[in-house]
Structure formats: structure tokens, C-alpha cells
Length: 361
Ligand SMILES: *Cc1c(COP(=O)(O)O)cnc(C)c1O
Image (cartoon, rainbow, N blue to C red; front, top):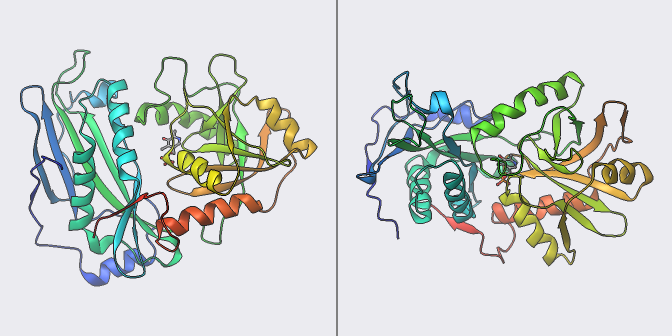
């Protein structure tokens, strides 16, 4: 049980029904936000306190606020799904809470207990329940919990005033016409993480360092960038915000091992799902040459990326300076089966044998 006492101040000027219907008909991603936001403060003396839900709106920050200078910040990303019967559910929220706690350890931020994390997400989704779109068309309410150094101080040390917030934004289907294979660019210049670095933490800094490589990818006509390990520049890590899977002709399935990559909850769930489907997954180092040669020779028959936003995304081809793999025009069979199995559990259309779903409303 959470010991947070969350005060709720419902705003009187809610988004009118008509306007809300308009937004939910075509929510896009990350542009519209719900009527409320949740805030909790932390200080060494008081611990977590002042939990409240109030009107969504801008923050007023002192220009010396530590996060703006030293990037002491972490976040989470998850979704609330509405079922046919109107009920609203989240997917493995404890896993997000545990990951936020691990990220906070790496960034020297205070740990928010997992039960408090789940309580804050439940509270905001509950108050803004009418912002959770209908199940049709794979829409959802994207929930973004985050924590940052809010102390106004330019000295370099862990902040003594920290703010945790939860905001939410309705999200449309990632693919409007069903999953389309994406093209990937292999960056050999930039890496996203090194040994002892922040690769396994969900922190804005990792995204900041990925942007220039992502720009390079777009300049090469690709959708996303692939990072290799920082030490040898040889082993496949992940994309800027998605993990990778490789399916071999002989049935073997490989995903890069944990360590410097982000521990995706989608990645972990797929290992369990595939296990139930009778496939075992090898978590190991995966040499970039194994990818390049495997797809070219036909040993690797499917490649897909995964993460909360797009669930499972087929990979069509990989390009690098001096070459590219043959283009795959359609999503693979196993890719689509895994995707469907996951989405069906999330929307309550298949039995949740793993006990992953958590009812909010
Ligand atoms: C969030 C994230 C993922 C995907 O994690 P999920 O829990 O599956 O959404 C993968 N890579 C990075 C760098 C991320 O930040």
C-alpha cells in the first residue's frame, strides 16, 4: 500500500466534451496533454511530500535550477489502455516503478517506492480517465512519469530538492496503416553508452546524446539509428529508444544482452511471450557482422525493434557507410505474431496468463 497522501484539486475548467472528442479522434503523439498533472516534492529532511494533482500547466523555474545545467533527470514511459467494457488498465506498472528506482540510483536521485509510483500513475489516470481513448485503432493514453533536480543551485552535487511529476498525453496508433518496416542507419561515429555509463538508465542525457546520430540517420534517408557498443564498436546495442530482436531461419532468436542497453519492458515481455510460444531467446553479444552477413545470406529472416510507443516495429533494412542489407518489404510472420499477442493482452482481448495487467478504472 502506498503511504502517499495525494491531494486532488480538480480544475473547474475541464476541456469541453466536443474539443476532447476532436483530440481523441486524432491524438497524434505527445502534443495534447490531459487536464491535470501530478506533483510530489522531495527534500532530505521531509522525504517525499506534498503529493498533489492540479491543473496541467507551465512550471516556473529559477534559471539556476540544477536540472537545466547538469541534467540530473530520469523518466518513464507507459500506456493506459481502454477495453471494450470501458475499464482502463496499465501494463506491468510495477516494472516501470522498479526501473525508475534503478534509474534514480544511477543518477543519484532519491528513490520513489514502487507502490507510490503505481499509486501516482493510478491517481492521474483516474482523474483524467475521460482522456483514455476508445480501444479501437490501438489508441491509448501515454503516461510520462519523470523526476528532476529542482534545487536552484549551481554547485555540482546531487540536488537537495527534487520534483517528481506525472503527465499524460493521448496517443494514436503508431502505424496508421499497420506496421510498415523501417530502415535503420548504423552510426560508426557516435555511441550512446559506455561501460559504467548511464546506458541502462532511462534518462534524458541518453536521448540528448543520440540526437545528432538520429539526425545523421535521417540525412541518410533512414528512420532510426543503430548504436554499437562504446568499447569495441562491434556489438549491436539498440536504437535511440527501442531494443532489437533477430530471428534466424533455424528458429533461433537473439536479442542483445543487458548491461549498457536500456532494459525495455517490452523486450523482457517478449522473451516471456516467445518462451510460451515455444521459442527460447538467446540474450548475448551480437556482432554487427552477424547481422550484415545473416540478412544477406538469408540466415536471419526477421529483424524487429520493440518499445512501449510502437510495441513491435519490423525492420526493413540496415544501411551503413559503404553498404546495406537487402530490403525486406513486409513485416515477418513471427514479428507480427509477437506484436499481436502483446497488443491483445494489453487491450484485454487475450487471456493475461502472466498477470501483467493492472486495473486502474
Ligand atoms: C524506454 C526505452 C526503450 C524501450 O523500453 P520499453 O520499456 O519497452 O518501452 C528502449 N531503449 C531506450 C533507450 C529507452 O529509453
